[in-house]
Structure formats: C-alpha cells, structure tokens
Length: 325
Image (cartoon, rainbow, N blue to C red; front, side, top):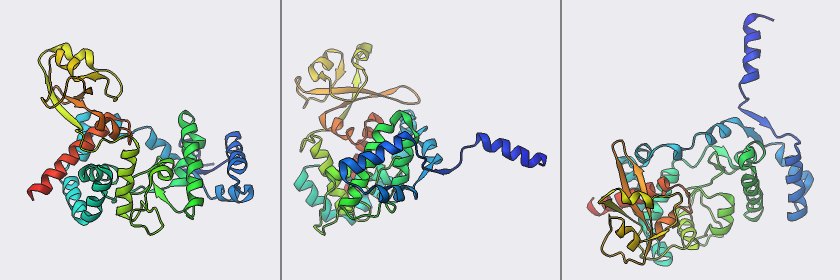
C-alpha cells in the first residue's frame, strides 16, 4: 500500500461517514416491536421502509451547535434583518385574507404568526434539506442523550404518514425533524395542524393558510390570551433587580414585587400581574425585559427566551414597516 493510500485509510478511521444504514441494535428492534404491537404496523413492511433510511452524520453535527447557543446580540442579528422584515410584510400582503380570518378566529395577532414563520423558515424559503425520517431516525438511534424524545417523534411521524396518506420517505424538514413553513415536530402536527381551507389536507409544506392557522391553533392550545400584552423593555434604578433574575421563562414574580426592586414598569400593568424579568446581554451592557404570559406562550414553540424575543421584536418591526410603507 502506498503512503498516500495508507494515510487516507488512517484518516477514514477518524472521520465519520456522511451517512450509514440503520443497524439491528436493541433500540431499533424494540422500536419496531413497539410499532407492530401498539400501532399494528406490518413488521415486514416497516423493516423494508427502514432499509431506505440513513443515519446522517451532518444531522449529529448540527445538533452540537444550535443557534440558541449564541449570545443575544449575535442571535438577534440573524433575524432582525431588512430582508426578513421586508419578507414579513410581503408575506402579510400575500396572505392578508387568511391572516385576518385566523386572527379573528384565534385571537393571535397576524404579526406574531408571521414572525414565527419568518424566524422558522424565512416565510417558507428554508423548510429543511433532510428527509424527516432520516433526521428522526438519526437522532432516535444515534443521539443517546435525547433518543427517547426523538424516538417518540419518529413514532408520531410514522403515524401521521399513515393517517395523512403520505409516503414517509418524501417529507423534508430540518436537521431535528421539524416540518413545513411552521416547522412542526410530528407530535405537534398531529395535535395542532389545521386544514384551514377545508381541502381535506393539513398541508403545512405548501399551503400557507394551513400553516398560518396551525401556528395560531398551537398558541391557543398553549394558553394564548387574546388581546394580552407580550413583553416590555424596562429599566432598573439600582442593582437590586439582580435578585429577580433566575432560570426559566415562566412569569414568577408579581409586578408589585418587581417595582419594589426598583424596576420601572409600564403603568398599565397592575401590581398583582405576574411577569418574568429577563436580561439580554449586549456587547456593552444588557437589556432588561418583562416577559408576560403571552411571551411565555411563545416559548412553548421553542423554549429559548432568545427565540421568543426574536419573534416578538421581528413581529413589531414587520407591523411597523407595513403600517408606514
């Protein structure tokens, strides 16, 4: 063997293959047995299906560097761009009738629904480059720290494929298995996706009205309060506010308590209302925000407070640009 071939062979031992077939692990065998016993799938057909499914190394790599790991001042720059704001205004104009009808029915402002779709897929421009079944199988069978979650999503994906008469090898999505304009995980699709135009298909990939209604329905199911405020930027008169900073995103202190800590809050908020004090680091200093109940509901879509703030700020920028254009 030449030195060059020997070197390539040695390197191949350390560089993972881009994709690999699913092997007969105990985890795989248990999953197939569960689908057969619990959901009455045909074992032979299921095994044949998985022969066409691949474990994808790029999916595992992507899971190691999520955007939410960035600090706020970098994360914000991903979404608060002129093109994404203008794209949101255009999406609003293109789907005005559906957005108006959905807002009336569900009580979720059009700009919030638009911002979700804008953050998730840039209004459908980037809905994902991986087959959903590859993503879920990769993370279910080859990503031990979250295998339980992704195997449950794989189960839901196979069920929705059967229910909706979809070839499970066809749908495309993100590296985490999220699908369509709204980037629903399979369990969310089964629970919340809507057929808004009544064509007997819940199409969140190509049908924007279905995607719009599905996002609004998700929020309502998670407790969205019609007409409720979302978040306010606030200031603090001293460092006493630091005692109110804690993990999580659920409103956990009353406005009255926060006011006693020297936080200047909007006058329309009552002392008894609960909020979450959030700090967002800047290159120089920080921004303080109060997240109210509806802000918490946005985090049910993605638990990161960075994500929820990006959605909120993008929604405001889209609304303002549409009003002034």
